[in-house]
Amino acid sequence: MPKDPAAMLRAFFAIPKARILADLAEGDRDFERLLHEGREKVVADRRSADPKVVAESHHQMMVRAKLTSNLK
Image (tube, rainbow, N blue to C red; front, top):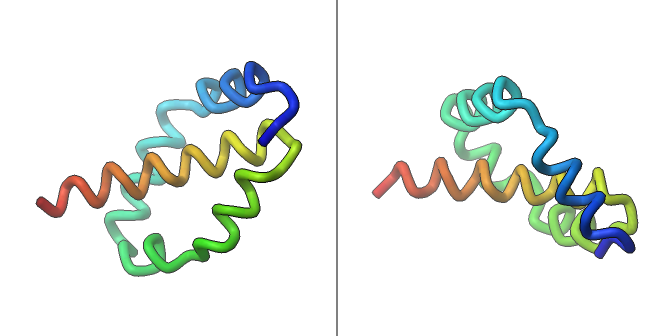
């Protein structure tokens, strides 16, 4: 966990909408890769002290959650 959660939130909310939409579109094109892209990396990234790394990990989790919810 980052030492500065506020910095992680700033980094997370600074991800541009265009990037979010591009990541969703890429995940839609290659959903299998997105799902199998390494759970270990996600867990390791969440333990990072770097707020940007943790923010990126949360972003990827949100992309996977959105794409998975579209399957229902």
